[in-house]
Amino acid sequence: MTTEHNNITDGMHLMVDALKANGIETIFGVVGIPVTDLARHAQEAGIRYIGFRHEQSAGNAAAISGFITKKPGICLTVSAPGFLNGLTALACATVNGFPMIQISGSSDRNIIDLQQGDYEGLDQMNIAKPFVKAAYRINRPEDIATGVARAIRTALSGRPGGVYLDITTAMLSATMDADEAKKSLFAPVDPSPAQIPSDEAVERAVKLLMGAKKPLIIIGKGAAYSQADEKIRKFVESSGIPYLPMSMAKGLLPDDHPQCAAAARGFVLGNADVVVLLGARLNWLLSHGKGKKWNPDAKFIQLDIDAKEIDSNRPIAAPVVGDIGSSLCAILKKMEGNTLQPCKEWMANIEKTKNDNSAKMAVKFNSTAIPMNYFNALKAIKDVLDNNRDIYLVNEGANTLDNCRNVINMYNPRRRLDCGTWGVMGIGMGYSIAAAVVGKRPVVAIEGDSAFGFSGMEIETICRYKLPVTIVIFNNNGIYRGTDKNLGNGNDPSPTTLTIGARYDKMIEAFGGASFNVTTPEELSKALSEGIASQKPTLINCVIDPAVGVESGHIGNLNPKSTIK
Ligand code: OXT
Ligand code: ADP
Ligand code: MG
Image (cartoon, rainbow, N blue to C red; front, side):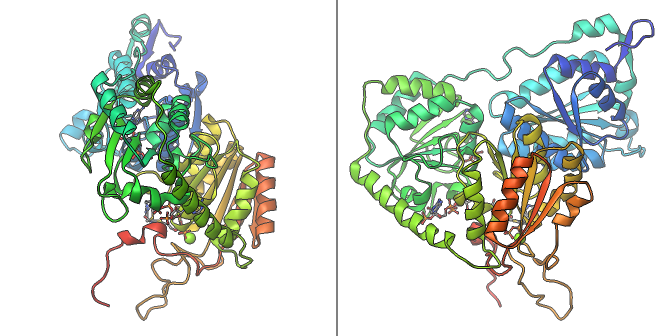
């Protein structure tokens, strides 16, 4: 965009032009010095600007929009404290492998570099470096096009992740010839190129797989991100191999798929002889591929775009370094004509374990306990969502997370958005806003009461933009539960206890949203159905028995054990 005065433009306008030239449609942020006008001009130029109440939620929204769209999510922050508030989300994007660019205003380099104490002065680019794939600073308007293009290519290529782009106050107000500026604009060609695996790698992997008696496929969020949905389905169904979806890979194949082994997780991990890691890391979520959960003699085939991930935790017998789509294409071609049929006993044993575990779950579903527990509440939600399969499901908490993951089926890819690799609380409202804005579908957020508190002020954002988000807060009065006692003599609540009987539903009334307080599965079912159908901001305070949660949900084993009482 040029200003009226004698055909010049400035850094601020050229930044907007560069983002537009790269097809950026949405910016998530919190404005202030020195980026307020940048946001105004972006909005004026037709880029949708979504203003948040805290930069961490804006960053979370940018990160998950990258996962959903395969285009880098853009988070805009002010310098120093705003930059730092966004940095947690940027670091999470890198850990999760979501493409995100945090663009932050920054102070005058001369004052920063001499440590003379600038307004919100901080050496942001160097502070960001450990948490991102790359950190760039743009000091001159003539460098804007290059800076934006490099940030986009870096965020998207190879394993996606976070990129920091530092824009100085001086640069934003510096001017240059408008024609020159226009000529400088470009979009990177093929920023995330296909990465084709070697023939040898494919040959080795297929040979190992064809010899398997008890094969297993583990599908991770890297496979979900790749959007190679049809090839993934074809690989699973043509091979007949049972699969385990990691939480954000749920829905790539419907969770009620006959080959889904989620309800026999312990059995398949403990007995599989060949395991295919499909865009999934053998990290803590898979007990590093070691210990009593795993068959010690299991051999691994790993399909991953990042060679550094191979052998990270266990020796990989057949590494296939490439993007999921290209690797599966090559593997399917190599498997043509060879029928791999896992042994009937393996499939029968999985089926039996699934049925036994499902029967145990069904008993929990039939509980008539009031206050509700996780399972009769989640059963009510499951019945509603099984009839509303086109939604995004956002989920965080400990018990609320782990129990919801196992109970609520997903039927479409990239629709379950949760705490991810770092198990981070606070993603809820930012993810909900991004799913509604870029995913353009209704959102249901199932939140622990503690987890909700991390980003709860964004319900004002949700109401301001009138987004179709229904928030269900599992209110058990605490972190994990609401019954812990203060071990000391004081009257303060215990470290895990929150306000007893809090009415979170009252909060959304302040911003014009719909509110429900529910104490039975029937009330919950009705409120959730109404919330989804209304396509309006809705908050449901769901009263859960404070005594039923367990410490840290399914990962209590990670807590240090005190050897003295
Ligand atoms: O086969 P076996 O026999 O093994 O059985 C398995 C399955 O086969 C079976 N199963 C089924 N059976 C029947 N039917 C079905 N459909 C079915 N599906 C499965 O069930 C078992 C278990 O299956 P599962 O769950 O798949 O297997 P498992 O062993 O659990 O899997 C291991 C994992 C590691 C893959 C899995 O557990 C997992 O993904 N866990 C994620 C854990 C996580 O990330 N948790 C969040 C962090 S906890 C903690 O850090 C919290 N904090 C601290 C904090 C954080 N995180 N961040 C920040 C910024 N500050 C602080 C806080 C504050 S959580 C938290 C808030 C908690 O309070 P809330 O109020 O929010 O929430 P509540 O807890 O509700 O109060
Ligand atoms: P999960 O937590 O679901 O197991 P992780 O985030 O641990 O998934 O692992 C995802 C893996 O997928 C990472 O190692 C990443 O390098 C890889 N990955 C991401 N995108 C692609 C892609 N397009 N093709 C192949 N691998 C990918
Ligand atoms: Mg709780």
